[in-house]
Length: 112
Image 1: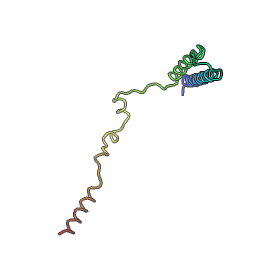
Image 2: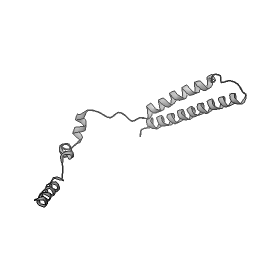
Image 3: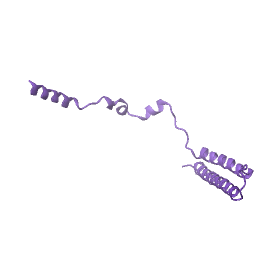
Image 4: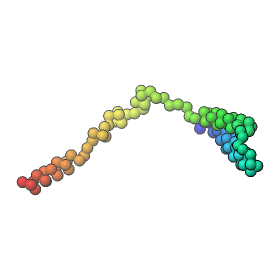
């Protein structure tokens, strides 16, 4: 894991913690309004700003912590494989044919 990925995970964790704090602040504000018997008004601007900023910080952390994209070209994947891996067809291999023939032969002998 590279240094930028570690920093990205740390930034993502910090953003998630601030997002959890914004959620708790919203719950606390609504509980306060309920305690003083006020109707629900808008959430304070500070809480909304904290929520938006923490969401952006979390997004930045996720973007920085991902690994580089892998190549999707088939030529690269085929070059990694041997001919034995590419030429096998396990879906066509059946080993039940001997048993089926012997069972049919046994049934035919019984009913003759």
